[in-house]
Length: 161
Image (cartoon, rainbow, N blue to C red; front, top):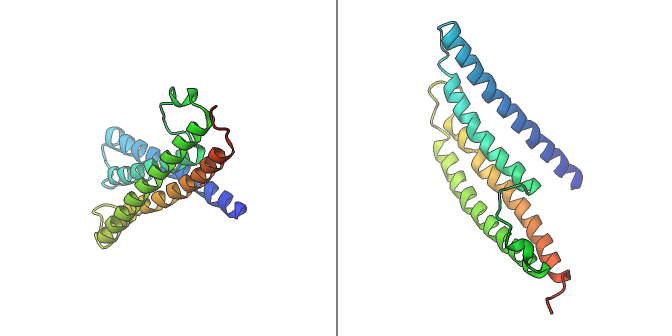
């Protein structure tokens, strides 16, 4: 199980790198062709926009895995360990709920857009929206693992006296 998780996480990391590289290549090529050769590409702007959507969701997944989302922690840093664990558990419950909403909505969106063809790129619009339920699934998995850890921490932390 741990080995499979490492493979999936490595694949996500490499996919994020490839997507970001694709954005950079599309934009760079478009600028060079448009302003240097005066011959713009018709598909690069659309592809770069779709890749940016995927990059944002993949970045969200990676930040969730690493626990590096922005957070205001000045109050919780001063709280007792049980309170910290309780707040962490509540945050993870909210994250699972949000991932469920996002995933179910994204699944319907991808299914509804699956037969809509793009104008300039050779894949359908559903492929663009498919990242939403996939990212939600990954976010929920990380949140559930963090929730389990928070509950364990809550149980083992000493109550304030």
